[in-house]
Length: 481
Ligand code: SAH
Image (tube, rainbow, N blue to C red):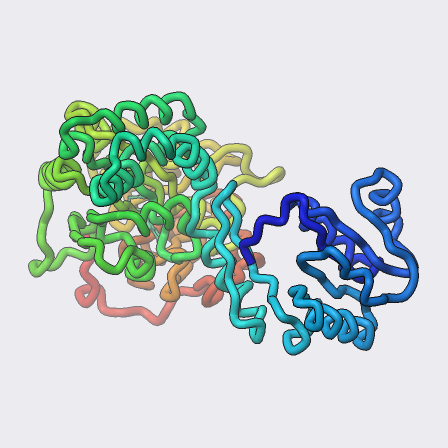
């Protein structure tokens, strides 16, 4: 119920914890709260002593409703609650009986609150659990900055009306403001800039010029849609155009706005080469980002894992910066973190690993520029990206530079996805294991003492494959390049 209760009397019948909760909410709404009960919980009694609420003692009588606009029956006695409802009915006072749909003349909705913006959800009183579920869904979708936005716009209401007396023009102005940079500035806590941008938008003579697009570089995480961040979900919901990699799982793409344009710009992954796949170049991605942003679209550049971990995110931002396109970055859960978690491998461990390195390399190049001595150090965890091929070279170099051949490894294929597989063993047998289990991209390699913990701590999907499978003829297995 959206009612202005400021200075209006509301009766709460009951003196326990439920009554206390209701009284607190009513005080927050500015109501004059009258609590009627033979006895009060200590917190309620304290409020009476402070003069914040009024107390009418004794058993309920209809006169308690005198002067009240609204009443809440919150006793644990169904008979008393009904009496309050009946007395309210006779006097035309709206009554909510806690947990009694039938007896209530109004229901209390589930609420989503962002400053002055409130969303009330009702299931007609019948299925409060459903309302609660919807509330959770909305909570995830609505950004905290919505409150600040509502405050700014209501503060400026008069000015907006003066500038745009005509309803259609005013509506277009609001559309422009809501899809422009102001919400994003407020989200970043940059209130002053938001205010200035608002001032500029108000006097903007050319509406087209104000309609600038933007690009959000978003990490989609490793595959499990539950690992997308709330911010990531929100920008996906707002996106007009989504440029996504092949690594982004279909489940994450399903979270995008229904009418968003989805463009697969996936460069073929090692191991998934197929002639049917369209080979996009990095230039094509740059062109598409610029083209759509310039057309005023909200573009999401969606990448697997985190956009700044082996994702060329930096290069894409350089391009946007050079062309004056507004951008933001939403981090994602990178493969190393996700695979560690979903395979039961803590990446650092007091006893086994004091540091973690994220590496990728074209391991077949002799001149790879990597510091192998550093990589081969003990008590450190290596997370190797894009490492399905060249595992024999990797093993040789690590051992050559001092890593024990008995160091445990885990190869995690399709980490966090339903198809996840984990192959474990020791460094000496790394390449053979990967080959005999036909590990495919995307797969992440973890080398280090901690990898052995997967056998005890795994919890997701199948247990790690610790044994060699039955041998397969070598020629039937083509190593992914
Ligand atoms: N930006 C991404 C990495 C891109 S490089 C991130 O932060 O995760 C691509 C490599 O990431 C793959 O070859 C593989 O090694 C790893 N990878 C990405 N997703 C993976 C997944 N679900 N399971 C295993 N490895 C994954």
